[in-house]
Length: 383
Image (cartoon, rainbow, N blue to C red; front, side, top):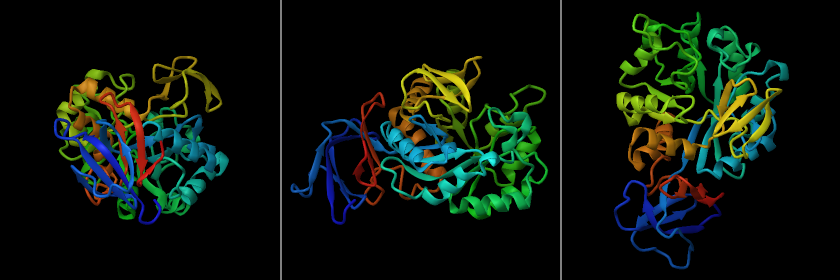
């Protein structure tokens, strides 16, 4: 925001105090200055939200594309389109998620490293989430084999040199030889090592969590299923008291009953809802092209013509709405799953994820169905 500029949101119903009196939120220089029953300065710019719900901005820690664009496009304009598209759905920050692309000399990573802190006109990029390259080829899902390498000190060094301080999360298979070193180095670097695309057994997963992994990439997907004789990593995840998990609560990647079960077993504080979304987010249903193959976007799911599920076309606000529907949690808990919990995961909860004086003015004005009317990023209305 411009220096000394003040914006007042009038007549707000706070998402975590739905039955209390309406309040006014005073925003100054990109932060929340105060919350009260009377505006402090009637000469300031005002937006009357007329009793709509105000929530902290949503944060998606796993998203590849939106608005017809993808991180792999290796274009600043594509990042701008993603940023502006996501803002329409209440997203104020996201981890640009992608894979290695040696065929294109990883130019997309260079673009991200140079521009991730730019103001792109909508949601802010909070860093890079790299799926791989140190994952198990047996559980690669839609990731190309050319984007998967055995973990070595030299390869990690090249990745860190390429991505700079943009790298905030890396999905890794801890059962691979050499992964222990990678995990240790990522933690020292300030990057989150996330369990995923892994064929680890129960004991290997337990050891990985004991050795520093505290997060799981899209739980149940791209990992062995739970079996009564070979419980695999899922039992280790569910037994943990600290590991947080990414949940694609679309009802397709995970059955609604599984979403409800996860919330019941691990608790709301460890649920980090994500889209794992692709370029179809924000586009009308129809036929599109991804990875040089035609696909259809329908009912929030993207599938190749042979029926293979490749991603979600739902934005994060709808993911939050479905999480509330599937789990029967309250609105505050559903909002936390897409705002406070990802902020806490990224170590940003000192600034984001709350509506409090002194916090960043990343805010969403919406109704109880998560339909978004207004998105504010650093005190500026971007949608």
